[in-house]
Image (tube, rainbow, N blue to C red; front, side):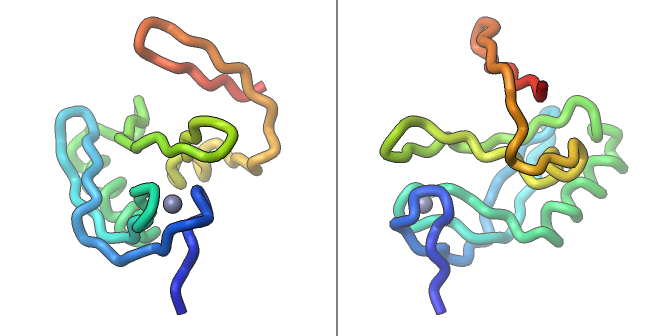
Length: 112
Ligand SMILES: [Zn+2]
């Protein structure tokens, strides 16, 4: 059974072992799935946890949380997926209202 990408809803999720996250200059490699169409990466939960544990030991976690993600494109605009660990830590339900502001090259998303 092939999984359809929840981001672009066109591609299939293909297992991969080279999802790279960079945290404070440390590079972590995770296994997961990558969309064959838009390239969005979905690290396996256990691998995300492993990276978080490793990062904590290195003292580069939890603040600031910084993961590298690719933006993806949908019919109506550009999508940024919130990494699962941030979602969990902030108990996001996916229905929150947010304020988005631009500060130089940074985009700040503030949960209201
Ligand atoms: Zn996709």
